[in-house]
Length: 247
Image 1 (cartoon, rainbow, N blue to C red):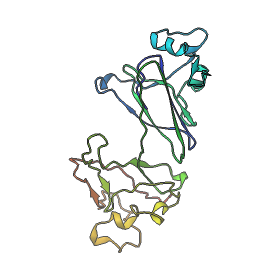
Image 2 (cartoon, rainbow, N blue to C red):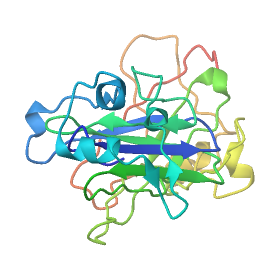
Image 3 (cartoon, rainbow, N blue to C red):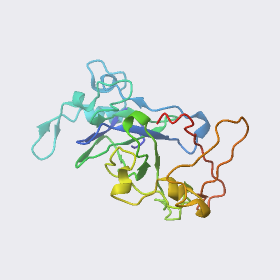
Image 4 (cartoon, one colour):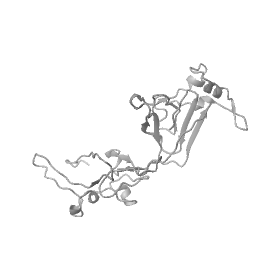
């Protein structure tokens, strides 16, 4: 997404894939402590019969009743979104939104798309950004819950290496249309999950795909796994142990 600076600008995204997902907010580096979430744009305030705003950029748009060499008419009301809560999350159309001032810039993602559209209407200079978002997902069925994290090895702006900590002895792989079962992408791509790749070298191939623990005695328990910081100064690992074998 892009930062919309005035009420006279529209940016909308379309997809023929899964509905747009909200994955984060981009805070303004000049005001991180006072940031507030983005707000869906209500185009009735801009191009409705009784507009709330009337700046020069907006008037340029409202007065532009024809566009292109064929002088096609413009129906500005269709640059709005009926979703005034999220701006179209979960659907094929996201935007427009307000992200000027202290408001953050929303980051959204679609999956399985063969076509993505970007529509900009502005009285001045305006831009937006599209990119690819590599993710590594858990392979468990949907009833288990969703688990995923982003993968970044190179800074997209500076080209510098990004330190990517990971659990196990195999770095995470990018998943695409992963089969939701216990083996998932391990059947088709790099096996970056599983018991063996988590175990220290002396236990690999000796556990019959299980890590046994004595559950009959109270006290503290310790379990050793492999983990790599990949050069990061610190890394935090969060997890849980399925003692009752519910899953």
